[in-house]
Image (cartoon, rainbow, N blue to C red; front, side, top):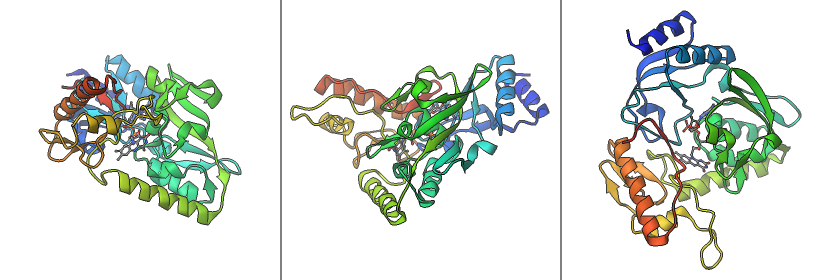
Length: 312
Ligand SMILES: Cc1cc2nc3c(=O)[nH]c(=O)nc-3n(C[C@H](O)[C@H](O)[C@H](O)COP(=O)(O)OP(=O)(O)OC[C@H]3O[C@@H](n4cnc5c(N)ncnc54)[C@H](O)[C@@H]3O)c2cc1C
């Protein structure tokens, strides 16, 4: 019996929801990813602890999957298990006059749209970001001048078998970066945040304006993982911040394709899976962009999209 089957037997015994041999492509916005041997869906903290104990007993590495909207998953993700939070972690609740506790398996867009429509302002930008709240926390997701960590009071997470609550002031974070992303040693389970009561009409207008802005600037409903590269923290000769899409365009790569993947003609910092692309196709374009942009501008672009498993 292989170690994944042995682990599965114990998961079954402990009544922890899991599936074997799951194709990961449907769980990612790229729609790329091969078959994974063990996909766990713990529904509460106790099940998370038990899952980790069982996996470590059989020497199985694991990765946390949220909405899969910032990931390039291997075509052969067969040497690790997936943990995807479910159950109570999908919920959010109001815990004070204008504060909320949000589970990290809640979907970011509908959750923050609902909270905004309850008459609270400050989180409207989040209603345009796909994926789960956990993925948004780990990389301090943001857009249109807003960043999730500016709203957070505290984060709850599991690390080294302990359940920890840490105030924002004690967490290091920055542009698309947190200590959780750097260390990869925690499972984020929830966040508390405080918003401001606002005017319903203004909130509705703000939601509409941000949605329209996004529709106008990004390839809509296409298979991508959003911006592939972070913007460099540098300015051009006129003092304007440099944008990765512009550097990619200037390197002559707009619309360049490999296999089923293409550098989006609409937004050069997006790679789109237009026809059965593999992780290897996308990786080829990512490496090409890094090489050409460096050649033309001397700038090393840093990936925002994360790799899951061996690629190529
Ligand atoms: C069309 C499109 C537009 C986008 N626009 C934006 C944007 O404007 N701004 C922006 O910041 N991002 C944007 N993104 C990227 C992405 O949507 C965000 O980064 C999102 O917050 C990722 O969440 P996720 O649940 O999909 O994470 P995943 O892709 O599933 O995972 C990302 C990382 O988070 C880790 N992770 C996930 N959940 C947990 C958890 N509970 N505990 C510990 N680790 C966890 C994973 O292990 C992985 O390392 C966009 C993506 C797309 C496809």
